[in-house]
Length: 269
Ligand code: ADP
Image (cartoon, rainbow, N blue to C red; front, side, top):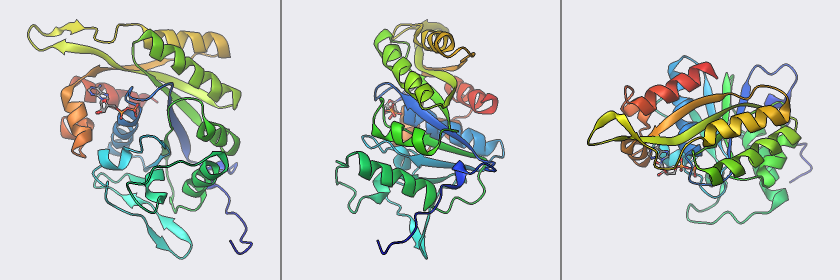
């Protein structure tokens, strides 16, 4: 209020040295948030300064996955300080902008746009190497707003091997391209389960196979540049547990195959 001019988004400035990578998916539950937090932690371990904007209005599960579910950002003058985590990654979540935690975010386009801009422009991020954005699933208002405010953002698409998931993931990728954003890669999650009886060589294709490859090749063809399958992450109960207890697998169990693959993806992105 008060006729105050809106602050500019630092990451949208031509000289910005921060890579913005939005993590997108076609539908919920494919592991988008899990991938986001684990990539962030792996990048921080690689020595990068990393921030996360949790813009998933339906889930906003990132703070819990990082063990800061009950934390609130502080305010210094008219700037919001992001919540620091033990691993050095700072985070702001759309859930933190609600007056009460149990409140449902039932905002429409303009309010969501304002929330997104607030998390990008009114938060004191300092000098970041990478800002990861956990987008809501699908091709909704937040994705459009992001495309308008940050056409220079890159997009990482997360899918499962399942046909139906891949199809909607392609739509999310195509949407990014319509907003002139570059799709940097595809991560296939829940790719297989190492059979607990026969040993890790026996892989059970719980959700089928080929979804990641399919999305990568379809988008490559559609856009005229190579969209890589950046990695395939196996199912692992300890990945789920790490998220539940606020200690993601790349930290809690760094030599697990899922953690190694997530770390590799982070380094090669
Ligand atoms: P999304 O952000 O796409 O909705 P989440 O990251 O919240 O998905 O994951 C949904 C659930 O699946 C969470 O409980 C998470 O811990 C679990 N999960 C995600 N990826 C894996 C995996 N590779 N192995 C085991 N559990 C997983």
